[in-house]
Length: 338
Image (cartoon, rainbow, N blue to C red; front, side, top):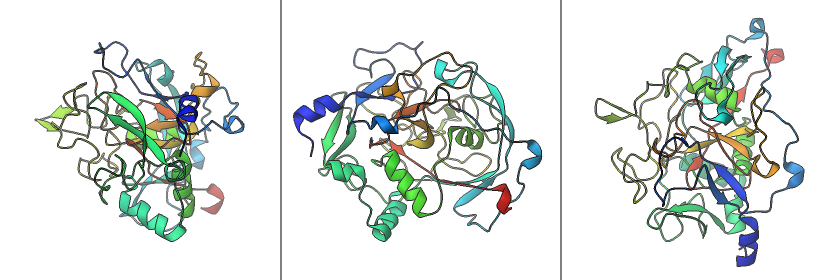
C-alpha cells in the first residue's frame, strides 16, 4: 500500500477527458479537460520519444479479404480493411487533422472483455493485476465530486471492498493498460490501435460524417442509445439510461458490423500512445503521453465530456487502473500467412 507522502508525490499524471470546451461547467465539474491521478511513478524509459501518432498505410491491393484462420464468430468480427478518413476537422484539437488512410483487415472482439472473461484468465494464468499489487485504484465519488485512490478497489470490487462485487456480464474495469495487454497476449491477441478502433466504430468509415455510429442524437425515439451520464451532473450520476455505472455487454444496440459498446459504458484502452496526429502542431508534454483510450464511458455527458463521439480521444498512464476504463482485443492478420 502506498504511503500518504508517496501518493501525494505520485498524483502527477493526467487523464484526458474529451471535453467540449465551449460548454459551460459548474464550479463542481471536473476541472477543464483533466483529472489528476497516478498510482505509480511513471517509468521514463517506457515513454515514447515519437512526436506524432504514425498510421502505417498499406497499398489497397494488399488488403486481405478473408481471415487467415477460423475464428469464433460469436466472439469476434472480421473487419475488412480499406480506405477511410481518420481524425476530425471539427472535434477537439487533439483529434485534428483529418487524413485519408488505408489499413489492413483485422478481427475485433464483438464485446468488451467481461468480468467473467477476466476471471477465467486470472484462474488460468494466476496473474495479479497492478491494482492488486498497489493496493488501490481510481474511483470517482459523485457524492462529493472527488476522484480518489481507493484502497481495496480492484477488478472484482471496482468501487471498493465495501461495495458489491463486480457483475459477471459487465465489462471488467480497474485493469491497467499493462493488465489488458497481459490478457490479450494470453489469448494471442493485442489491443486495437486508435486507427483500428475508429475504423471499426465508424463502420469502416461509413459513419464518419456523424457524431455517433447511429446518428447525431443521444436519445432516439425516447431511447438512450448508449450508457452515458444522462442526467444529474454534477450532483449525481443519472439513471435515465437505466444504469448508474457499467451496463451488461450487449445491452445497447451494436453498430452495423455487429460490435457492441463502441460508445459509452467504459473507455477502452488502445495499444498506442496518446500523441498528436501527423500534421498537428500541438506538443503533448512527456508526462501527458499516456496510452490512448477511446469510446467514452458512463461518466461522459455532452455538457462537459463528449467522449463517446467517434473521433474522441482520452488517455492515461499505462499503470493506472480506473473504475470507468476497460478494453477489448483485436487479432491482426498478416499478409504472409494468408
